[in-house]
Amino acid sequence: MRSHPLAVVLALASLVALSLAGATGCGGASGGGAGAPDTAAHDEGQGADGCTCGAAVCGTDPCGNPCGSCEGGAVCVAGACEAAASCDFTGFAAASGTATLKSGAVSPVLRYEAQALPSKDRLVLEALLGDGHDGPTGPGAYDLTGSNYADCGLCLLAYKGCSPLGCARTFLADAGTVHIDALPAAGGGDGQALKGRVEGARLREVYIDPKTFASVPLAGGDSWCVPELAFELTADEQVLTDACEPAGDGDRVGDRIGDFTLTNCLGDTRSLHALCGSKQAVWIAAVAGWCQVCSEKVPQIGAYYEGHKAHGLEVMIVLGEDQAGAKPTQQYCKAYADAHGVDPAIVWIDHGELTGGWQETFAKIDPYAQGAQGGTIGLPWEALLRGVDMRYLWSTNSGHGDLMTHLEPLLSK
Picture (cartoon, rainbow, N blue to C red):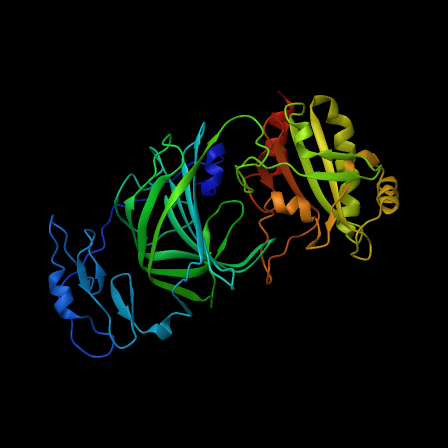
């Protein structure tokens, strides 16, 4: 089992080997009819350099030679022609894309993300580079067959129902091929080329366990076919260090969180990065005035803080909504702190006009929302950051173990 690809930077879990070297092949012609392969193109696909089509009747072989094409409106999925009706969604029209390579004091992680408009659907290619991760090592054809998010060194995902809180539906490719023509290398700096294409991919709707990262196909879930998608762009390299980065280098577990500013019950304004290097750990809890479970949890957090603040613990109780779901006033915030027996200086107001509660917090820290359209979270939601560099270690919805698994070692330093 391994952790989420971007959590690998903290070595939160070990990797299990997954062979990605298997080439998609292209073999003999099949009969005619709707959806049958173009046999003339297929015959041309008996590739050079030992590349053959094997059992595939469409697409290309690992060397890029044609193996055939599908007719009658069929689509090529993992080397076979299938009726387009077998796919609930077909294709991906990328309107924009970015590529980032994270390296430095961590295992290199490459992430390519494309977004479609106006739907805001996302397609993401994640690759674990370097020794021992079974990700791509250079140009070549990489098979997606049987991929599980817990151990894929090269993962192809797609998302639907996306909002600032997250995406409601997740899809993972377990068939198809990623052809890589140019691959950035750690230490090469910005501007390195990432070039390739996705071919014959089938993505199935899955649930990804936030603790183990194992992906489980949803019963009755949809499928998403991507016959072909080419990408060519340059990657920005982020060299991670043990220091705060004002803009951050991401919002997910393993990333350093960028700076943001809130005001507490006493009217004091402070930025998150004002704590950099002066604290061992920052414990963040998102709460609301209408949340009964929060009313039970907040006094416990406050008591733990009083007992451990001398060891370098900082707590931020982030109040996003009052009892009516509206923006908490400063007066309400102070009354909330007093009623729950916590220092009003550690209770912070975060409610914006655009997205309502916790706007600033969740803009910088991915809550890994799941569930209904647009994503949902349960309250209280908690997260832990490492004080030296504001690196995101764990949250209620993501990261292995529980909060204390990560907090206690930090406070013992």
